[in-house]
Image 1: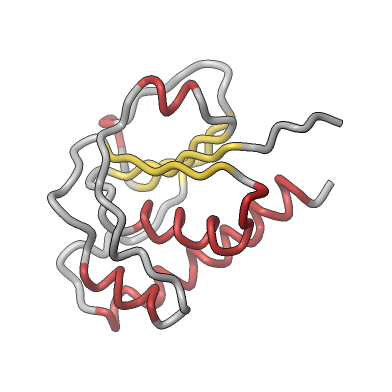
Image 2: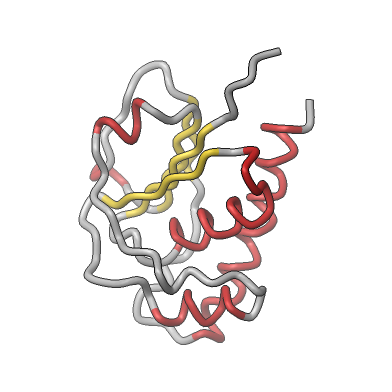
Length: 135
């Protein structure tokens, strides 16, 4: 048994919606048991306000987060890389565990449209947590 905690990187194009919601859930549910990062291949200027509102309904505040650019260092420092709608804009790094979560893009949508995306992300995060920590 090793003392290092698993690390997860969530990547989407703008790092403003899906990846930020996923990171928020994982931080909230895992506490300090998992290292969490998020980034985008073409980061937006700010977090999607509908994603912030949808997460606040769950008691998770992601308003202070800032979209970040995807770097080689972030990928290399992560055990699991989860992409969301990147297509070919996110590079592949050998030796990493990859998952591609097909989720609707919340960009430009209201909070009513973002809720089902948020709920699907939550279910996937719960399954990921069980996989990472439940052994």
